[in-house]
Length: 387
Ligand SMILES: Cc1ncc(COP(=O)(O)O)c(C=O)c1O
Image (cartoon, rainbow, N blue to C red; front, side, top):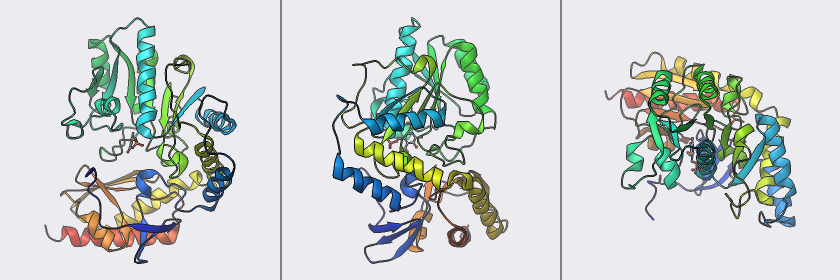
C-alpha cells in the first residue's frame, strides 16, 4: 500500500551510528530508525542475544509462563518504580493497554463514560484508539467516527488542565508525552510533570505517560519522568526497548497495576521469549557500557557545536534538547533538507514542517558528533541562503 512517502535509498548494512546502502555509500545515522536503535546498528550483544535465543525457543504464547518475560518485567519494574508490566509488540499497542486501564479505572469509580485528557500536537499511534488520543487533525482526517472519551488541551498548559477538570467530572486520567516528539520536539517547563502529578493526586486521576519516544535513555535518564523525581501511575514503552526487535510494554503501579485481569487484555506475540531475551540484552548493554550517563553531555555537545557552526544564522530560531532528543527550528518549512542531507551522507528528520529533529544513536562518538554538526550546519547555511 502506498502508506509511506519513502526516500530513494535502501540500506543493506549497519554498524554503530553508520549505515551503508546497496552501492556501499556510507551514511551517518542521526534518526536511529525513529528513536529505536539507541545502541546503534548491529550491536554484538543484541546480535548474540537474538542468535542464541533463536536457537533455543522463539515463541510459546502467554498460555504458559515465560521466564525471560518475568525477568524483563522485574528489571523494568525496578528501573521505573512501577509494580506490573504487560508486554506487546509496538508503541500503539502499549498505549491501547494504557487507555483500557484508564477506562477500567473510570468504571471502577462509577464513571460510565470515562474520559482521558490528552494534549494538542501529541502523537500516540495509528490504531483507532491511539489515533483518537492523538492531537493532530491531519493524522485523524478521514477516519471518523473517532473513539469518544478524549478531551484535548494545549500541551504545557497547567491552567487548561485545571479548567478542563473543573468542567468535566468524567475525566479519569491525564495522558501525555514527557516531551512531544512527532509534534515538533516540544519540551515543557521543568515542573510540568510535577504539576500534573499533583493534579492527579488531588483529583484521584491516573497520571499516564507515553515514554515510547523519550524512554530507554533517550533524554539522559532511563525514563524522562525521572528528571522530575515523580512516578506516574502508568507508563508506556516500545521503540528502543528492543533496539529494532519489536516489543512494547505498558507498566503500571498501585491502583492501576491490577485492573487488567485474566481475559481483559492479551496479545499472541506479546512478550515472547525472543523479544524478551533481546530486550534484556538491551538493558544489560545500557548498564554495562554506561550509555545513559553520557547522553546529557553528548546532547549538549551537539547543540553547542551546532550553535557555534551556525554562527548566528537568523533563520534558525531555536535549538533545544533534552539529552539526545534534539529540535532545531527554522523560520521556513525545511522538509527538503532531509533529502539534501541524505545526498550528503547524513540521516535527519523534519517534524512539524519547520523543526529538524535529531535522534542519533546514544552510542554516537565525538568524531561523529563533529561530522554531524559540520554537515548539518553547512546544509542549513546553503538552504537559508535562498531567503
Ligand atoms: C510518543 C509516541 N507514542 C506512540 C508511538 C507509536 O508507536 P508505534 O509506531 O510503535 O505504534 C510513537 C511513534 O512514533 C510515538 O513517538
